[in-house]
Length: 334
Image 1: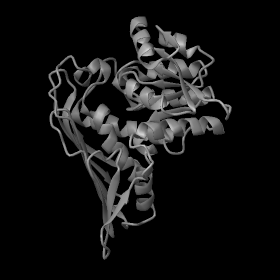
Image 2: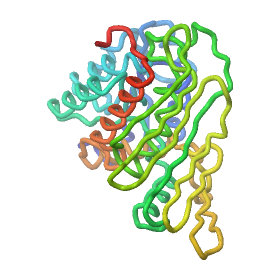
Image 3: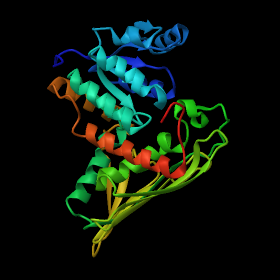
Image 4: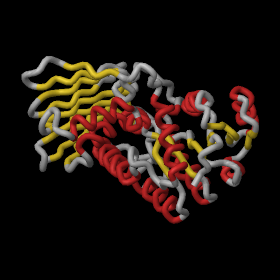
């Protein structure tokens, strides 16, 4: 169990955009210390360290994984590297927060979860949406029956593009495509409210490289009479909204549904109710996510109840099913 009186020491694995955003948020938290950064390039690690005033820069992932002074490592590498990077850290006894999508596929996710449990190490997918207070409030309302039995969920996430063929979003070797980078949010939103679907249907526009550019999903829960229509795209800027409708009402979430500042609750026979974030709550859910990791570590918990490992594995099974329907396979996959 981590000590409660000293800041927890973080290592940052990879130096891309999401690593920069997460590190910037950690630097605002008095109970967190960014102690090290690792890249497969010493020069990139040093540049990142200089930018964020990080004392230690490693030119290899393994070297940072072996640093016993670190309490937790944040893995911000591309999807295709999550299994290798997080695995190195778990085998070295480090706690790990691993970016989403959790891995490239469900088999890799199961391997990471088994490693964490074998080494008695903390592991969590960086599904920051699940740590957002308003998303937690929304889920509680749905699960408590505020809108009755759920019948439909709609959610979308699309970026305008276009992205060049060399961009990571179109690179099969990096797990490119709309689904794993953007579609994971709508899929995780549906999982949060209804669990793993029994039916998965999908269609997509694929790139010349063989990754999905524009994907539509229909998920079904026959035992509950519910369905979800979800889309993701790297060819069009979509509204990035979500709604969930039940037998007694509806909840609408505006732009940026996975880090909302407000949502509207419509209940049959009642005036619409706007639910807003606390005035002092950080809008960026990355800090909520980091706070949950540190709470777990201080409490000696090996996984977060907000982002349970079995839930992350279930989401990966759904993403695998979608890829199976649309015909996307990544290098070295069976």
